[in-house]
Amino acid sequence: MKIVAVGTSNDLKVRAVQNAFKRYIDVDIIKVPIKTSVSAQPVGVTELLRGAFERAYNALNTIKNASFGVGIEAGLMEFYTSTGFLETQIVLILGSNRRISIGLSPSFELPKGIVERLLEGTELSEACRLRRGKRDLGEVVGYVGVKTWGSITRLELTEIAVRMALIPWFERNEWLITLEELAKKLGVKTEELR
Picture 1 (cartoon, helix red, strand yellow):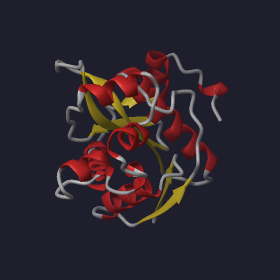
Picture 2 (spheres, one colour):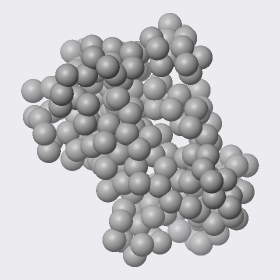
Picture 3 (spheres, one colour):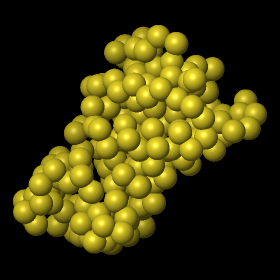
């Protein structure tokens, strides 16, 4: 049995990781609340990836004998849309072999008013509560669940992103980026994490 440390306090994200990994291997999932250096509402691929990196790294290094650390960040990713962004989730899986894989969720556009609030630093669930009166969207079905009448939920989006990040682990993966390579690209000093 493999131990998977998930760097979050969000039960929905933990369930998504468990659902994805258990499709393929027998795992023991351990939730590890992690604080990151990124904002509560990350904006841009670099900030999303940095948050996921910090979560995975710290989770893996907190749990003894963990085979994998998983970090998940949701937020706005730059894209060619009217607002300049898509809402997405980035999953980073760090193996005990110091290799990293990355997966993305299906992504979608948000209304201009919500994007403006997110760019001001308001979290998506709060921006939606202010606009639509919804509560705790991030822990339940998510914005996508409300807007698709439950046909696609945040749990599903997160699970798909985890499954995408898992793909390289089913084959020889020495070509994956290393912990040190990605840390350098992101400007992260791993000795300062935790």
